[in-house]
Image (cartoon, rainbow, N blue to C red; front, side, top):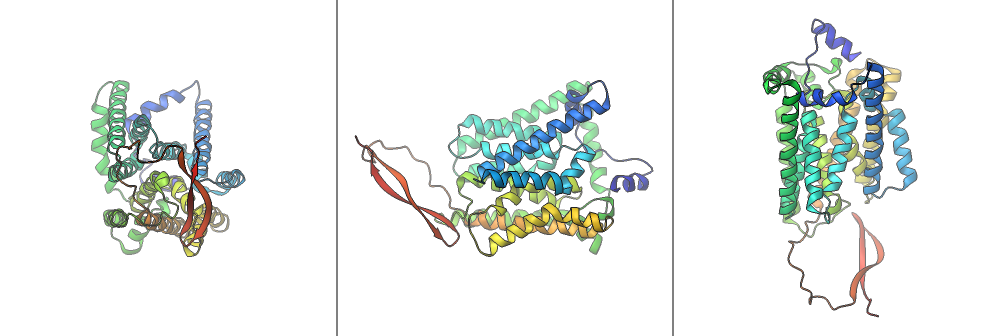
Length: 387
């Protein structure tokens, strides 16, 4: 319905925001007829979605039966996913790229994994720049954590894939003019204004409809300020409580915040863009601590998953209510994510391992799990492994 409204208000025309690389990439699905090509694209997108959720839940240590429950709810009740399938968009592919890259930059992996993560996100952003904040946030996170070699490998992969995407699209269209034309049309896309009734469900669109002022840039600057404050606070308190956002999951947290910031500040946020809220939503839903933050994350993620479908069943044209029931949960999970980021413990600076610093045959092994305020703290004991 939103697409029909947009077409009727623009003399049957619709601006195209996708990059030349996206159109060049779609040639791999160009089979003999449209129906077969669409079916193949939908199948690849579905496999990407399932893989992303399985990897996401595995990284968050979610039991397999709860993973199946989440998959079932997302597939049957999550209206943004249904919209993404109907319009043939690429948010499921973006979701897989975001989750995969955030796991590839986990501590303990080789620099080649960081290069692969940068390559993956470079191609994803070249397809459509909705995920542009994700590689920026991950690069900053790697640098601040003192993983300079991994940051350099990530940046190298990002630049290499971006250059390959530009060159590939130029070769497909027979020159660089395709990118120049896309550059020229971008200002027109950014100045056009679609309201909530046209399917623009972003927070900036809601505020614009209420007060008549474009606050996209203001919201983005405010969110970036809050992110910088959270990073500064975490570095000022290196002994802070991890609260589930230990270094192994910091990449997922930063990637999820990048997606949430896009949803909250973007001038155009169609309903299928909310598929990218799943990583941060799952992060706060399966958080290890208890109390009000756990309850808030539980309620927010639940509303994000099912509220829009329920509202569309009762009042399909209540666009403002649908937008509110999507934006408010994303706002809550973004706040919880920033809270965890501010409280996470920073890793100690890396230093060469002294072979003589630890007696041979001794290692640290978990002794017990002790529930504490703000999470689970592992207690350790020393065990002699000498034969």
